[in-house]
Image 1 (tube, each protein chain N blue to C red):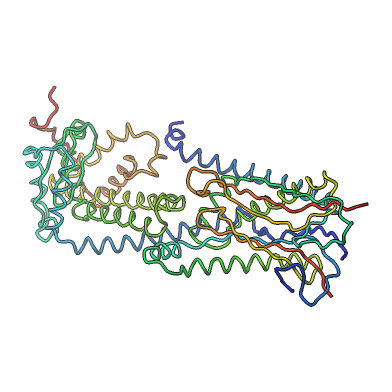
Image 2 (image 1 turned 30 degrees about the horizontal axis):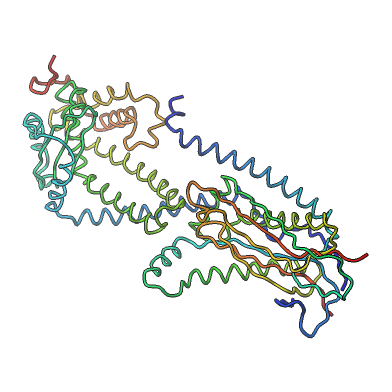
Length: 157
Length: 104
Length: 272
């Protein structure tokens, strides 16, 4: 018992790592499943980065749509990123974070376009921001915000 | 693979499009580079290590986007945009996205 | 222009490798890096220490001594002298002019400061029951001087601080991690130093009294309060029980005799 108390810091650290790893992996898997499912549902809605070229009379309505999300990294992956910072190279643990954030933002944008009856989104743009400038500093949260926006086009029937 | 950052592939006709493709990468430099950059900060000038890092990341992001487009069966990506962000201290995130199309 | 929706199964933007295998690689790399840094630092520090003349040490000792509220003790000096007389003529310890101080602090400890200064805390004196034990403690501190440990750990500590600041930058999560790892190497090293000083102390004690009696008494008193061995993995000193065992092994190998110890004389004995 005494030993546990004396190495309390270490113990908490280990618990956080294990918790971060298991909960983080579970949450990520669940998120990816949901992303894949919704992407399939919305696959008919075209999203392009190009400006559309429409003949007069074809477009009934056009409106700006956007979707955004903030995703945070788990404790385990943050440790990996910190270690990676020493050696350099691909920060693999952050890859899935930004990938998830961006796909989720696009999905939310598509969902909002679908509600308005749009059939396509043109001139889509993506931005990522970090909330708080010191994302990887000791006690702050490592998170990423993604925002997707574009012009939703509702066609004449 | 044809890459452009305008709406079309000039001189060619787009016959089919597949939606957006994106490629991203997060990279960090090793501590030696950080150290040199810190020194360079004293006198100013180009931070070669960091320039290289950005270049590598951009190339990788492009490569990944291209790979996605290829998997979709496209032969060109139009209206490509680049963006950066700083997800982590000392690491650069580069991402590229565009519309995958097939041209004649 | 026709739109063909395609759902990709393969996600190119996320690397396929398993995070746990990456953790293993990174941690292994860190240990290797830190180990190498430590070896290089150690070699440089040892080299610098061997080139540092005793004069500079004496000057540093004066600075260090100001940190401790201590008075020079004639009674302790009296007991140190016969130990010093036992030293071989070519011993590096002959270059020092030893001064011994008594500090009124309840801590059970004694320290070797640069320049031949030894500070004994009064908390330690209360624990000591025989002349032989006291001689063992003093001889142990002399051992630190003989190996110049006080200078080495100073040099290493300085080197470690500079190295982590230079390599990883300050105020950075990575640098904190690296310096923690470096520190655990430092602890290993420090434990080895203590054991070496113990052995030196034992040899000197045996020369002084002709037998090794009382060498382990002090540690066995400490061992009673020391408790479990696990916390000592991260401590600067080895567990008292381990020290006793190491000493007993040395006594056996050298065929030292164990005879009765002399009780502590009045000038240092605890007032009843």
